[in-house]
Image (tube, rainbow, N blue to C red; front, top):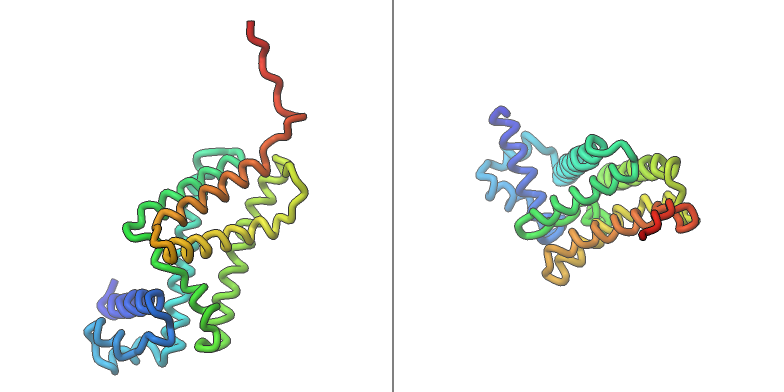
Length: 214
């Protein structure tokens, strides 16, 4: 990575940490410049204004999340041919990643955009909405694969189940911070895993009979 890209990445990392800690409105360009150790002209070389910084920061955040999902759920597919088992493995791996974060998940930029939407321009809000739609579509596609092999035990809207993933992760982050309990997000992901496992488990009527014991 060249010096210019390193500087850009440092600016984005500093800005993200500040936005997650105190919000977009309370994060000033001057404080980002000071912490990054650059001049004001150096900042504006990379970003025209604060909204351009927000766009780049959000795209960076979405890319990191996409990469994480690709890794954990891709690993699940490598370890199991059955789509349900592969998804359950991926959820377990995701929970482990959340548990390994030393101070818990730092927060969600998508939620920050939602809570302070009037501070962002239309493009930033569109990026946030599209990212959530993309994640929901990812999980809906996985659920479709599972449902093609394992019929749900209860009538359920798979779009709503797919939406639950984003709701649980963002809700888990908020709950963990509010209750000062970094492991709550991990437990919420594992609870969703249990729900999916029960939802697609074979009903009692079709469970294979156990062999009689002497």
